[in-house]
Image (cartoon, rainbow, N blue to C red; front, side):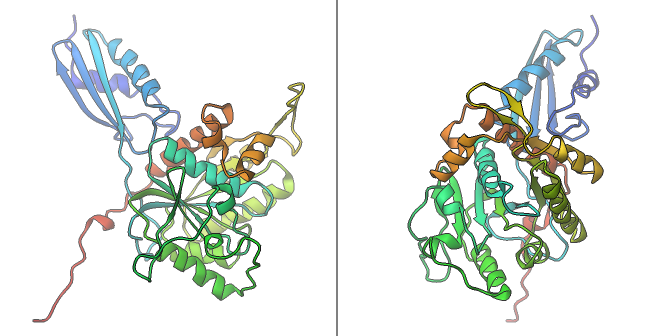
Length: 363
């Protein structure tokens, strides 16, 4: 019987390619410890992304792999997650209480970006992360209704706002501060100032991820976010329709120009399945999101169906991930959340937040 060594175990573990990282767990430094006691091997795995819905499946696969090594009697696989802060654009200051900011953008309206953003935030929370959402659409805020939140945020010190809470999400929106039917008749500079205040004057509490639901287009708010807010990564939402893809490409190129990494593309309304007969139809075309990802060297994060339940549940203030947590659609959102966070986990970590500020005082 061959001797069991760490090298042989590591060699075997390196053959498993994680579906979310799309790399092996050894090269991505997720294998933190391999302990050998007789013929029992204990492997400690620490993922850089939340994975509550995937942890047991991963542990089972790795256990089978390790136990296939000659000389191993049994394997114990300990899988956990540790979410780090990742670097943002150069020269942009870290925001207290937030490890990572993920911007959700689209080139045009009507592609389901806000619905995707809120379900992505809820899916990250369901996977075990501390998550929040900032509604950056000053002219047309929709998150208060989508999250079923009423009332105004508290201010304990008269200067800052406490985030609203809904379904374990910390949330902030201009919609919490003004009446739902009051139009925001503001010029660009006022809008960008409002966005900065909502972001910087909210007491975010130890968030792993803040999802920012951007308004459509590539205007003032997008530029402010890209130049003055520490964005760790951006997600582009599109439909398969050519006209939507054309505008989504502009959004993608904008983030590239301001050096915000694009984590990937989500294709919304990709296929319609008839609720009566089950007939499948590609109403807005087929495979556009995947083609766009390939052409622009971006990751394809997933495709969501055109399903009236998504619209009904979000309109009623209980998005799909919380309304039907065990449904196939919720599982797709959770898979997209894992893939998004996994892609971010491979980016450069931000060590600046760990260092104390040095203050020189004259006595």
